[in-house]
Amino acid sequence: MRSVMAFVYFLLSLVGVAGGADGGGTTLVARSAENGVETLLSATHVAAGRVRFQCLRSASGHCHYVLFADRRAAATFDVAVGQVRERSDLPADFSLCVSHLDARVGPDCKPAAEAVPRSQ
Image (tube, rainbow, N blue to C red):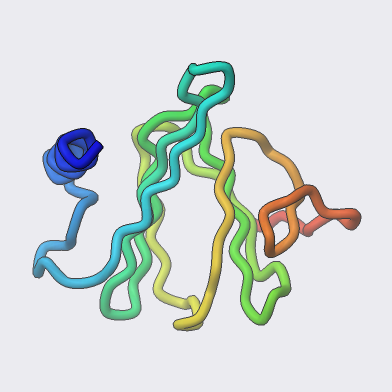
């Protein structure tokens, strides 16, 4: 398992998502699969007040993000496979959910009872 994780980190570093230009910050990698088939691979890099969302693979062609601040939805957006979106206006304690599906979720990333307004 350790060698698999090292290989994944190596691949992510090749496409520029594992670490920033200065090597600082944190990279969050989200991966999901259904019936053994990978449905999502997303990398989010947080460093120096900037957040970089990169959609590497998605069964739907887009990674759908929901951002939360104080356990309330702050923003929703999608990023096409192979594309990147950057933001610098997020609070330090934001959280996120990402999926290959465009579904409304709560801060626990489970389906929400109420719709979350979408922003572009």
